[in-house]
Each structure stands twice: as C-alpha cells, then as structure tokens.
Amino acid sequence: MDENELTDRMSRRFGDQDDNTDDNNSMSSTPSQSETKEQTSQKAQNIKKEWNVRSFYLDDDLNDDLTTAFKRLDFELSESGSDIDLKKTRHFYPLIVRLGLERLEEMEVTEVTEELEKTE
Image 1: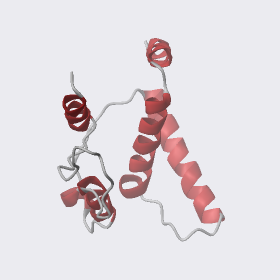
Image 2 (image 1 turned 60 degrees about the vertical axis):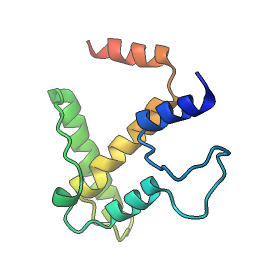
Image 3 (image 1 turned 180 degrees about the vertical axis):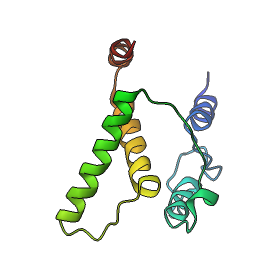
Image 4 (image 1 turned 30 degrees about the vertical axis):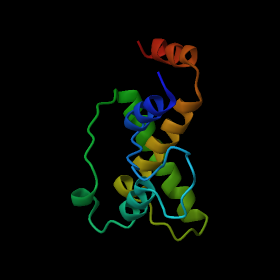
C-alpha cells in the first residue's frame, strides 16, 4: 500500500475531509474544513437543528454516574464563579464524548479489551 493510499484511507476513517492537502503534506495557512466546521458548530444557535443526532443506551449504573457527573460539574462551575451556564446537550455531552475519544485514542487494544470484559 503506497503512502497516498494509506493517507486517503486514514482520512476517510477518521473523518478528515480536507481535500486541499497536496502530496507534500505542506501546511496551509487557511483553516481546514474540519476546523472551520468545528468553529461554526460551536456557534450554532439551535443545536438540535444544526448538530447531528446520536442516540445510545446506558445501563442504570452508568446513567446514574453520568447524571451525577453533570450535577457535580454544574455545581462546581457555579461555585467557581465561572460565566459558563452548563447545558447538557451543548456543553456536557460533547465534552464527555471528546474526552472519551481522546482517552480511547491513547489506549492499546489490550486495555480496550480489558475494559470491555469488565462490562460483560
């Protein structure tokens, strides 16, 4: 498999839709399509219309942990004097997913397997 084919497959797999890269992989001063989309996404006025819907199911314990984590973070933000009015859909859920994806990316396959075995 040549380098261009590998790069193309990785781009499709990990959602990099930026078709403006050249064969030398030089950096461009203009923001990539994914960066621009992320910036626009954060400024969405109506996230239910402008963001993608993703539904998933959680067992009772994990659901309770998620609810507790939201309440704790909301309380801590309000006590800290932060200007953020924490919203579940706009702030909390994307934060949980983003942090989870970052952690997952750092994990080895054996670690993932161990975690999955714990849940069964």
